[in-house]
Structures are given as C-alpha cells and as structure tokens.
Image (cartoon, rainbow, N blue to C red; front, side):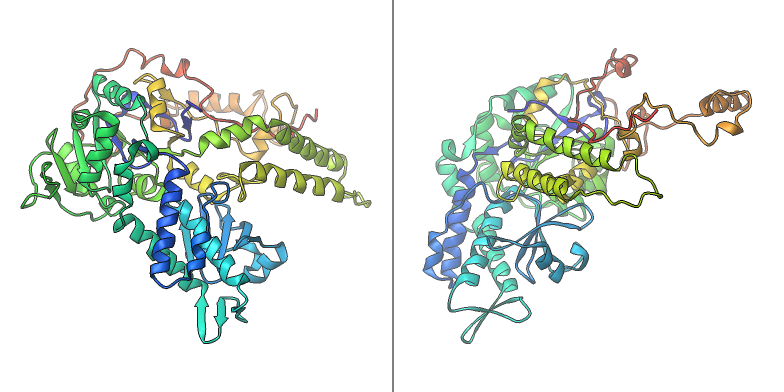
Amino acid sequence: MSLRVFVNRSLRMEKINFFGFDMDYTLVQYRSPDLEILAFELAIERLIDMGYPEEIRKFKYDPIFPVRGLWFDYAYGNLLKVDGFGNILVGMHGFKFLKTSEIEEIYPNKYLQLSESRVFVLNTLFNLPETHLLAYLIDYFDSHTDYTLLDDKTGLLGGDVLVSYKSIFHDCRSAVDWVHLESDMKEMIMGNMEKYVVQDDRACLLLRQLREAGRQTFLLTNSDYRYTDKMMSFLLGDDWRSYFNICVVDAKKPKWFAEGTVFREVDTNTGAVKLGIHTGPLKEGVVYSGGSSDAFHKIVKARGKDVLYIGDHIFGDVLRSKKSRGWRTFLVIPELDHELTVWTDRRPLFEQLNQLDNTLADIYKHLDATSRNKPQIHTVLQKVKSLAHEMDQEYGVLGSLFRAGSRTTFFASQVERYADLYASSCYNLVHYPSFYFFRAAMQLMPHESTVDHSSVLKSSKTDLLKRQESVGQQVRGWTKKTANENEFCHEEEEDEQSISDGEPGPRLRSKSLSDDAAEEEVADTDVVGVPPAFVDQQQ
C-alpha cells in the first residue's frame, strides 16, 4: 500500500489551522468489493420490485469491470471514457466496446459536451455498482430476442412496449437512490461492521497528532447522526466526539457550500434535532445538523486558505469547497493503490511504449519540408496501439482511472484542477510532520519536457544583445535601474494575510523555526513523474 501523499499545488501544513474530514470513504474506509456487492444486489431487488424481470437476479457484480469517472450518455445508452475536454477515448454499449466508426457515427469528431443534458457523470465510489448495473441492463435488453433496436438507436421495442435507454437510466438511478436513502443497507452495514468497514489504527493517531499540534479538526458528513455515531464509535471509540472541535451531520453537501441550511443542535440520546435554530458559537462535544459554509466561516472566523478539507467526492467535497470557499483540498482516491501497483509491476510495458515513441521520433528526425518520401509507420503505430491496449487491460476491463493509453481522463483532469493534495488514504498524513511543506513538482510544457538542458540552442534575440551574454543578464541590468527588485508571487510564499472570504482569526501557533529554511529542505519526491518519451539532444 502506498503511504505517499501526492501534490498538485504546494501546501505548507503549518499554515493550515482547520482540518475538515468527510466520513464515508474518508475517515471510514469500506471494504471493497463487499460493500459494492451489497449495494448492487439491493439495487437489483429494487428493480425487480419496480417491474423488471426476475432474470436480472442472476447478474453478479465483478470488481474488475467498473471504473469511476465515466460519462453515461442515456440518450444512446453508452458508457464513455473521455478526456478533460470531452474527447471520447473509449466507448462501451452494454458489454460491447464501440468501434471508432460507431463512435464517430453518434458523436461527430468523437466529442461530447458535458453541458448536454443527456450526460450523467459516474464520479463517486458509490457509483461503481451503478456503472456495472447499467451495462448489465443494456446488454440484457439488447440481446433479448423479444426486443428490437429502434431506428434512432435510443432504445428498444418489444411488441407494444417501448424501453428507452433513458428510462433504463432513470429506473437504475431511482433504484440506487432508494438503496442509499430508504433501504436496510445501513442497518446491514451496522449489523456486520467487520465485513464492511476497515478498522484503521491510524485514525486515532492522525486526529490526536493534529490536536496536539494546535490544529482544530471538524467532521462534516452527509450521513445522519445515528449512522455516524455507529461508524465513528467503531473507528475511534465511544468518545469519538472528543477528537473533533466541531461535528456536523446531515450537511447536505454540495448544497452546504452554497446556500446551505441552518445549524440545529442534535440530541445525541435520540438522534433527533432540537427545537430552534442554533445561533451561538459551535461548541466542542456538541453535534450539529445542517448549516452552511457561510455560517461556519462567520462563527469560527476561518479564512479560506486556513482550511484543508479532506474527502473522497470530487464534486461534493473537493470541487465545491475549492470553488465556493477557497479551501485547500485533499482528495482520497482508494484506487491509487491498484493504479500504482500496475504502474510499478508493469514497468516493462511502459518502457516498451516509450521506446516506440522514440522510434517514431527517430523516423521523422531528419525529415523537413523538402522531404518527398513518406516513411512507413503503420507497423510502429499498430505496436503502439497493441501495447496501449495491453497496458489498459492491466488496470481492469475499462482501463485506468487516470488514463487511456497516453491520454489522461476527465477524472484525472478534475483531480489536477481541484485537488491540492491526493492520496489513497487520508491516514497517509500520519507519516508527515505537522509543519511539512508539500511542494509540487515544476509543471513542464512539451517544449520544456522534451528539450534537454544540455542542448545548445541559439535564441533569435541573441543579435539584439550587445554587451549582455543572455536575456537574463539584460533583465538584471534593467532591474538595477529601477527602485525595487521585481517581486513575483509564488504559491509557496503566500503572505499570511492573503485575501480571504472571512475575518482573519488569531494564529493558533507561533512561527515555526523551519520557516526560513523550508524552501531549502523541501522534498522533490512528492509526485510521480512520467519520463519524457523523447528528449531532443540536438547540438
């Protein structure tokens, strides 16, 4: 298991005053695939109650099939893996992979906009059973002899019965929502905690370390109090509330980060909310229901960049807290353990792919606009395609969560954009000191990552320089003529009085002795780097 925390944007832990935690799939880690199987089977029972045939009871959940981050086009019943711009990388209808020609027939230029109303993003861990169930249902009706495909390919007709892919999607959505909101699933989990919940000893250690370092911690979950109490007692003991300065249940995220609701105190004996709206300070040891981020900030005097919120939901936890409140964000991605295992164990595949990229580069290296003989690259491209497919299969039926071949996915682009930090577990933080400087690796553009520093290249500006040896020296000479040295704003050097959306509260701790030397002692191993496929060594 990877114990690393990976970095998209630099973050100094000593500047974080408030550590917020989601509960499900964050503090409470569920056993996979046991929980997915339970949700899958309950959803099938619900669909049968809704009128679906008894035959679907034979469907079995297979953990190697689904992957998060897929788009479901319910107009045509297709599961799509797309990149950050909406370009379709992989398409699947039922259990049949779509050919390139089939994708282009439905989606001109192999492109689909997320803004189109027919797209549903299967982004959460709770969506994994739903992803598999949708594929099962579409495959079932498509292969059923009593049903024929409509001319517009939006559904099937069986006698006088029309079954559209859109109706299948809505029925499946309704069944899954029922499982999580109205079924006995939570009772079944609470009745067999050892089967469904991981008991991680690092939970107490992490929360205790943060409190001892002078940080404030808060729990912010959409689960109700009764379920939260059972889960947290199993994880931390009956005194679990003592690990948090503030506890909020029934938060209704992502609404909590927008208009929200009002804070109401919870009666911990009955689980019911008490009469009236809570207007005073949020007290330690007391559990609150609902509320909003706006009220939270005003009550605790928290600035946006003072808060690090840790959750597993890319939209409800990370994206909304980042965009609406400016919180620093930590995304929990349990699949990282498997992704990194493939990344390391299947290293020869990645090396072969890099070698083929180098081969392609060498073929074109000495050609220019005067070249007339087109090189034969079909064989190389076929090998690249075959290797990329083999590489994808190592992750699962639908490939990696983060990429398809050499292209990154929509999910990966969201992680890069909205998650400052990410890891397979929030408990990986116990392996870092409370003053750690998570420094992001320099982001390189292609003209930087593929040109070696040892290359000797002459700038077109060279002739403009008279007594200066470089543009840098000329700039430094110009700077001497001005009153002040240019100041550049770097993320890791943010002023402590940065603009925020709340009143600045008192600092919870004094300046660390590591402040002055922090930049000299940062680790350079915070991210996994991909070696460039081709490095220009031209002299």
